[in-house]
Amino acid sequence: MSLSEVHFYSRKKHQTSFLDQISKAAKQAVKQTVNKGDIVGVKVHFGEEGNTSFVPPIYIRRIVDEIEAAGGKALLFDTNTLYKGDRENARDHLLLALRHGFSYEVVKAPVMIADGLKGKDFVEVEIKGENFSSVRLGSLIKQLDSCIVVSHVKGHSTAGFGGAIKNISMGFASRSGKQQMHSDVKPTVDQEICIACGTCMEWCPVNAIEFDISGKAKINWDICIGCGECRVTCPENAIDISWETTPIKLQEKMAEYALGSMSILKGKISFINFLINVTPDCDCWEWSGTYLVEDIGVLVSIDPVALDQASCDLLNQAWREKGGNDIWKDIYPKIDWTVQLAYAEKIGVGTRNYILIED
Image (cartoon, rainbow, N blue to C red; front, side):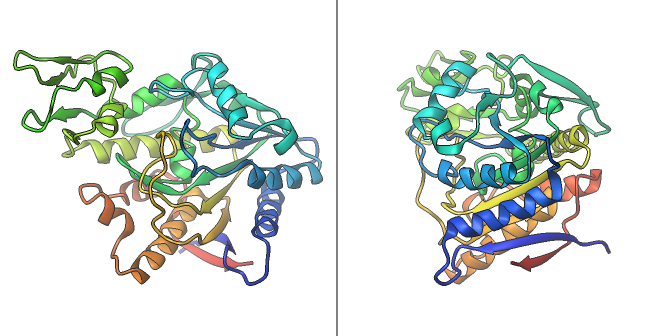
């Protein structure tokens, strides 16, 4: 049985600056990936307006410093969102990044949006999957010499959790690619709970929601793109997802997009997972929930599957110390969050078997 190495840098190391731990983690990632003269993309998430749990720019600066020290040329990037907000086009996305501190003065690297002004700049990458024969990734990604993927591990309302796999699937995909992955997610409205406030209608990016004859919200599945925005924004929790197949399909599709991302960079990619500010929800929402566990640290690997498995194992260890059982299952009992790991392993993205090396 082959094991992938996962390097661990603790947040709790006595009398040691966490910034120095990040530098050590970055040095490990750079050593595995970057050659002198490489243009190196650092995949980050700038956080939605109102969110505060994303990986902060002073941490990203340490990663940029290590890239530059190795002779690489760093740039930061993300892709546009499928839903409405300040990250749905490159102009607004870049301004949000600046407001959240991702300026050149702080991070010492330019910021770019990988799928262009309106999310239409993508490359089609052929894969062999059960759901897709090709995936659509931001066109900038194919032009990179190497890449370091920085992921904030946290919960996710339709995938159970988000880590490295989600970052190189949803995070690398163009807007049309994101729509492909979400296409099986079909929200439903509980008519007894709905108060007809219209909040869901305001947030729906494709106007798929209207009031029916009874005056309650109704979702047109023929128009719905499955972004899930309505579910999270409903103040009465009247909207849920038909969970019989969609969590599985979504996670399978994410894994297939991750396969495409791994193939386009062909071994020139490494991953850094931050186990800090761990919240129940994604950084795409305009808030940050209560932190679930104390900060744990940073993990590094060239294998995103092993990295996510190790991350969840460490989080579960901390969660059980607080009296819980399975951190993501406890929070999202209708979702089997392990599907993305098992399916990614099945199709060759990586392995769930790892050795944890504490540096």
